[in-house]
Image (cartoon, rainbow, N blue to C red; front, top):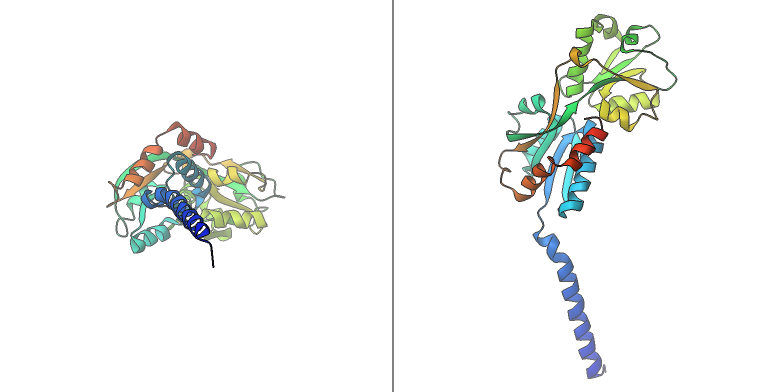
Length: 252
C-alpha cells in the first residue's frame, strides 16, 4: 500500500505537471495559424520571410509552393490559403479560380539566362550558337518566367533560331534541375534561383529588361481573408526593412 504522504506528493506533482503543460500549450491554442502559397521560383526568399515573421510574432505559418495555377487550385479546394505570392499580372488572370482583395508589393522579377557548368558562353545572344544544343524554360502558359522567356526570344529576334532546340517544363526549379544535371545547356530562370545556385551553375546573364514586360512580384490577399488578424500582420510585415533586405538579397 502506498503511504498517504506519498499519494499527496504524487498528486501535487501530477497537478504541477498538468499546469506546466497547460501553460506551455496556451500560446498555441490562441495563436492564429496562417497558410500562404507562392510560385516555386520564390521558395527561398518566401521561406526566409516566413521564418523572420514567425520569430517576430510567434505565429505559425504553413506554405505551399508550385506553379501559380496549381497553388491557386489548392487554395480554392482547401479554402485555407490566405495569401498567394507571385507576379501580379498572373495572379489577376487567376480570377476564375481564386480572387484577390488587394496586392502588397514585394519586389521586381528579373529574367536571366543561366548555363550549365562546362559550357562557356559570353552573352544572351550565344543562345543561337550551334554549340548551345538545348534551351529550357518554364511553360509559358503556367509560369511567368515562361511568358517572359518567350517575350524575350521574340523581342530579341532569337525565337526562329532557338525554337527547334527549345523545351518547356512546368516550373523554374525544374529548369534549374536540368541545368544542374547537365541535361540542359541553357535555361530561362529568375535571378532569385540563379543567385541561390550560382556556385552550381556555369554562370548566368541578366536579360535586358526591355525585352519582356515588367514582372511585379506581390502578395495577393485572397478574398475572405482581409480581416484575418494573422494575415493582416503578415501583410504589414512585408512593408518592413527586414523584408525589403531579404527581397534585395534574393534578387527581387
